Amino acid sequence: MTYQEDCTLPEELLEQIAAGGLEVLPELIRILINEAMKLEREEHLDAEPYERTPTRRGYANGYKPKTVKTRLGEIGLAIPQVREGNFYPDALEKGLRSERALTLALAEMYVQGVSTRRVAAITKQLCGIAVSSSQVSRAAALLDEVLEAWRNRRLGEIVYLYLDARYEKVRMDGQIRDAAVLIAAGVGADGKRCILGVSVSMSEAHLHWRAFLESLIERGLSGVQLIISDDHSGLRKARQAVFTGVPWQRCQFHLQQNASQYVPRKKMRTAVAADIRAIFNAPNRKQAEVYLQETVTRYANTASDLADWLEAAIPEGLTVFDFPVEHRRRIRTSNVLERVSQEIKRRTRVIRIFPNQSSCLRLVSAVLMEISEDWETGRIYLDFNSG
Image (cartoon, rainbow, N blue to C red; front, side, top):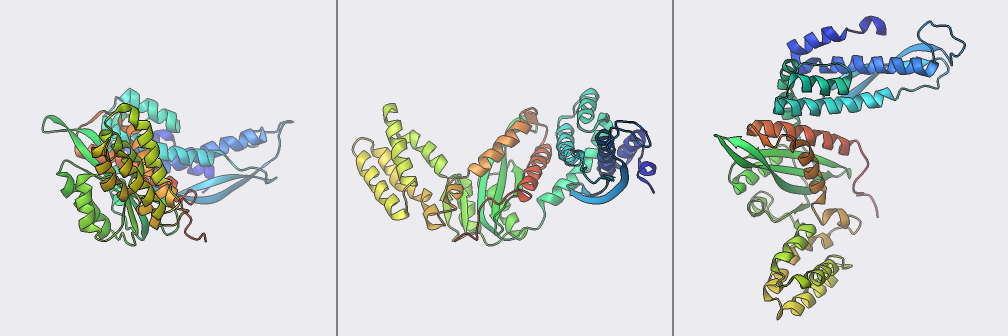
């Protein structure tokens, strides 16, 4: 079958989406990308198929099959060729980016229940054709299966484990409550980052954290050498129970922020911040402990509460000195998850209040799945082969 014969009309595809939901989206994406590549070749040649023109810059030479992997499965594409061999379509990369955007848009629209006009506008912008809200709703219903499979996928060896929580407004039993969104990320033995899991719950913090961490173990998480997080009270208990004996690095960024609560006078804050940075930036742990003791002594008489807090809390931020110096900058804070949290906020703030926990989990999962794929196909985050 030729490329032209295989091109289904958009109207027929919309009927397929209405009947089959998300399962037919790969077909829609395939046709849209193929058509875009075909048009790009025509622009490159400055001629339509079989057109004779004095400005023609070459000749078409059929199509080369290519299979690409997407979050919706494998998609078979037909890459247009030119006889001169100096053409490769930009539409391929752009189209695959649109596939990612389409998945996120479906999740967001499914949560929001937006109007037909708004759904049509968004899908028109993303893929060139308008899909009604009822068609999107049917398609997005199957999105849950894709996201659940991703959340439950098998894990492997993770060297550094990052943990954090954020909160989203969720309606429950007629009341608006704060739902805890727990997120785990990690750096594997290959040096690349990935999102390991996410959980949304109204349950008591410790029980929620423990169930979440245990689920990571059940999915095959192993080899953890260091856990990096802030000092969530529920997380501390859960971490100690599930990852007994695994070293913990308390986030230095949050430690520095926490210190301001114990500074008795505003004019002291700059000096205190500089003292804490000096401790964290010490060349080794021994020197950091010397700086810490000097700082505690300095404030013992003028700010005793601060001195007591420094002595108790700062050592929890020094575990990083036991790990390779090349890794320390990226494992001394949980900032990697702070940036993830900001991206989630950017996507969820338009919703403001989720109608239930499931809708919150759906959209957050779609965002995290996107981020994780970018990380796993991107550059190495930490080099475990140096030295």
